[in-house]
Image 1 (cartoon, protein in one colour):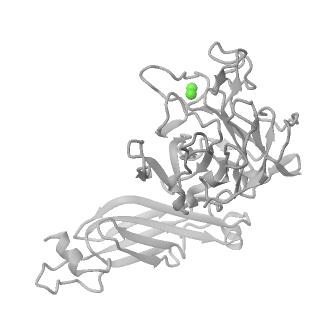
Image 2 (image 1 turned 120 degrees about the horizontal axis):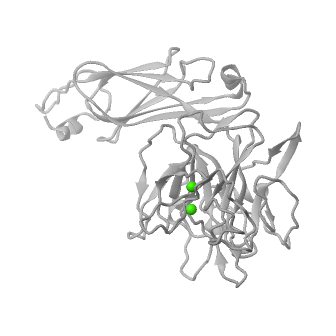
Image 3 (image 1 turned 180 degrees about the vertical axis):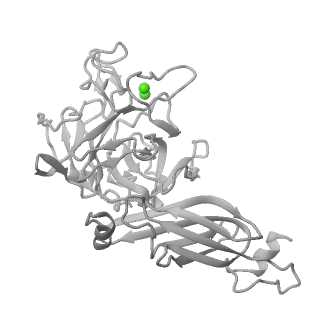
Length: 421
Ligand SMILES: [Ca+2]
Ligand SMILES: [Ca+2]
C-alpha cells in the first residue's frame, strides 16, 4: 500500500467511511482517535469543555478540528493511519476564568503534542493538559544592555542583565520559562544593515538564542512584587579580576546566569549563581545581546520538550537557523533599537510591542526600567501596555532589584512608537 496512492484518492483527513480508492487502489483501514483535554491542575475542574482540538497530518496538508464535549473529550471517528500532531486550545473569558481560578482575568490556554504515529488496529487515546498564562502577570522590569567603559576607555559588555517581575497578585512559578533574544539588526549599524527578513511573518518571533529556567513545575516560585535577575555573568563586575571597575553593577547575587559551556572555557561559571539551561544558541563566547539595542522575549511553550521549529535566515544561507516562536506563546517582550530613527528595524510585531526604546549610545551604562502604574499595599503594579517606548524609562545607570531614583541622563525625546512594516 502506498501513501502516495492514499493521498491521491483521499483528500479529507478523516474519512466519512472506510475508504476504498476509486481507481482500484488498496482499501484504507481507518482508526478512531479519542482525545481528552484537561485544564491545568490548579483549576477548579479538570474537563476542558469547549476546547478546540486540531488533528493535523504531518504527511498531508490536512487537518481536522473538533470541539471537546462536557467531559473535555472528542473522538475523531475515522483517521487514516499515519503521523499526526495533536493540539488543543481554549480561551477563557474573565468570567469563565473566575469560576475556574478565582481570578477575573481572561486567559489563553494551549497544549500540543509532538508528532506521533497512529497505527492500524485498536483505538488510540490521547490526553492533553492545557497550560497558559495571564497576560501581564510576569513582566520584564529592567534590561541593562548598553554595557560600560573601562578606565582605559575600552568596552565592556559582560555585565548585561534582565530582571523579571511578578506583576500579579499571586505566586507565579518560573519553572520551564524560556528567555530568548530576537534575530535582527537594531538599525543602520553599517551601510548594508537591513531590517530582519523575518518581518513578513506577523504571527511569530524568530529567536537567535533560547535559554530556560529548569524546574518541574513548582520549584521556582516568585511571590507578587518580587523579581529575579538573570545575568550574562553572575559576578561582581566592579571587583572581579575579569570585570570592569567602572561597571555599574554587582551581579554576584543574581538568580541565574547564562553559562555558555565551551571547550576553551571562555565563559566563566560563577559557582554561586545557578545556570540557565541552554536550549538553542547561535552566539559566540557568551549570551551577549547587541549593545545597539536587543529584542528580548519571555515565553512559555504549550508542552515541555517542544520541537524547535528552526528556520533558515532568508538571504543568509550560512547563518545558523533561527527558531520560530508563535506570538501566542510570548508572555512579555521588549525592543531596543539603535536610535529614534530606527523604527523600520523593529523585529517585534505591534501586537507584541508597539514601540521601542534607545540609548544615547553604546557602552553608556544606561538601563531601561518599566514604569510603575500604581502602588497597592506597598506592592508596585508595573505598567504594561505592550509598548516598550511607553512602558520603559531610560535611566543613567541600572537599578537591579530596586526602584531607586537615579539621575536622568539628558532626556531628549527617546520614546518612539513605530510599527514594523
Ligand atoms: Ca556567562
Ligand atoms: Ca553558574
